[in-house]
Length: 70
Image (cartoon, rainbow, N blue to C red; front, side):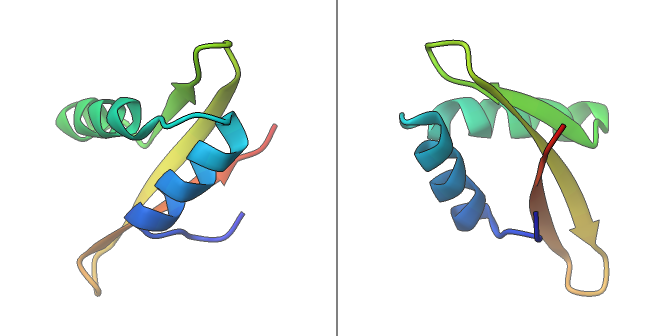
């Protein structure tokens, strides 16, 4: 999947998981950033999981997100 902005990835995850996972996303993003982890898992209450990769564009000083498909 293409690089998505912060708002785009949250919208996409909410649609794919059929619930608002904004708070879970923000918590996982913070933990990943603190530990230098390039990806993390977001899951809904039904147990469906989606892996999200984080990439930093140094030139633009911008984070981009990508959904990793198995």
